[in-house]
Amino acid sequence: MVVIGAGQAGLSSAHHLRRGGAEFAVLDAGAGAGGAWRHRWPSLRLGGVHGIHDLPGLALEEKDGARPASEVLAEYFARYEREFDLPVHRPVQVRSVRRGPDERLLVDADVGAGATGTWAARAVINATGTWTKPFVPHYPGQDAFTGRQLHVADYRGAAEFRGLRVAVVGGGISAVELLTEIAEVATTTWVTRRPPVFGDAEFTPDAGRRAVAEVDRRVRAGLPPGSVVSVTGLPPTPAVLRARDAGVLDRHPMFERITPRGLRWADGTEVEVDVLLWATGFRAALDHLRPLGLREPGGGIRMDGTRVVAEPRLHLVGYGPSASTIGANRAGRAAARDVQRLLRPSGALL
Ligand code: FAD
Image 1 (cartoon, rainbow, N blue to C red):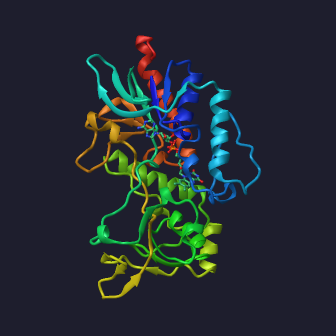
Image 2: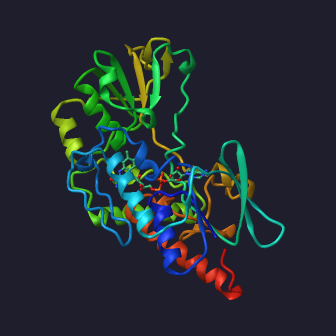
Image 3: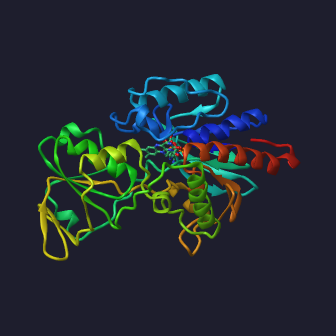
């Protein structure tokens, strides 16, 4: 059996496979432990994230909220892999998953130093997250922009924007958080497609369940999962309240085109900017599954829980309704149980 990815979803799956006595390998493209957390910007502190759930069976325990989340989570995941002796192979970049001549799935990967390898597996749990697939929409004039463009995946901190004019595009939490940081050192312009909806209550478990149910409904129908903020609005987190108080949430509608030196709206208004920061989200990193032909006419992958309807040997965890640390935990458990049930009749676990 193969698990692809060693973030929260992959490690949770591995934990439950281990407990069930399965033979498996975890293939992870990262240079070290931590999943996407190891790449998050240094100013994202442990105390500033919205609630990271412990991996199953081992508490995080770190108390210092001022430490970068990237460091703390990378240490925690490394400790977790050691503690449960999880067979994580890295850096292993999976390039494709295809159907083999027998009942196995073949997982082709780059295994470092120019070498490649293929794993044959009776089942695959895919836990590749979204971090490696930043999404940037296209706007007219974008290629001729002479300033700097970057996605939040490449953001390293506000210091490099000191004294510049920065446009932040996007209506999600990362846009609001980065806007607040950058506004302390630079002039900011905030642009969103739709007027932001500020939720007036903390993100309650009930609101969470409603958001997850809506995303679950979409993927069961074979639609792309969509974003959670589109369901919940922006909850009044400390970062959102800080941004409101600082008066940086002065939102502009979407511009019509990008000019060489800035942005232009349909009514002719122009703003010059030096930097265009795309806080426009991510897509599921699933390109390696393309050989399996899973996309439905609706553009998504039809799911039944964590199982892919068109390929029951494949599970997607940390995808759609399980794209949160708590969801990833649960999905890992469900997927591990399901694949072990699937394989038990033949007694063969790989
Ligand atoms: P990842 O952590 O992205 O792990 C995927 C792993 O797969 C990586 O190690 C990657 O290297 C590997 N991989 C990818 N492609 C391949 C491939 N082709 N071959 C091999 N390996 C591959 N959620 C919360 O619940 N609470 C929070 O506070 C929170 N804060 C967040 C803050 C930010 C800025 C962002 C962007 C997200 C946040 N989230 C939060 C969402 C959270 O990141 C996810 O729910 C969860 O951590 C993702 O875990 P994952 O295992 O699905 O993916």
